[in-house]
Image 1 (cartoon, rainbow, N blue to C red):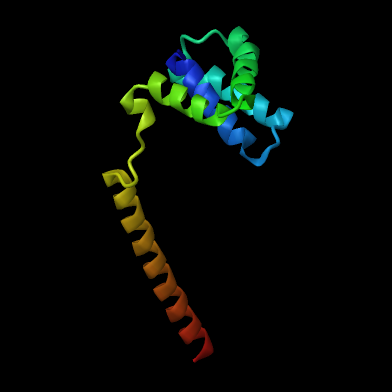
Image 2: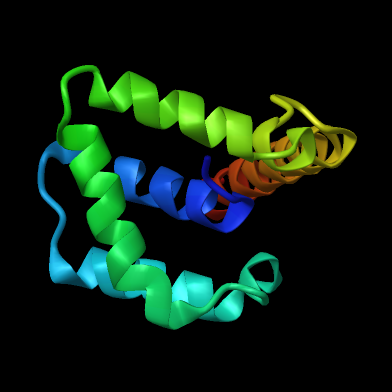
Length: 117
């Protein structure tokens, strides 16, 4: 069974490899994420190459993607697994963005009418 660190890394690998290509730059980004995010504080970065190989081996098996996704789900606690589609913060941000856009377009319309008239 995976631990939460490996499950998150496996998730990043799956997303990165979704287009069937995994350039070195993306591997570097995964390494940087692992090195900087607090959730990986207890993870030994020297294990990263082995985790990457283990993940690609698992994905390469028959039904490997499904097995990998099940292993990820089993390893992650709910708080790291679930992503709300709309949170109050997102809703507030969307409202603020809409207000700014409507104010901005009104200002542009007013500016355009005064400059042409």
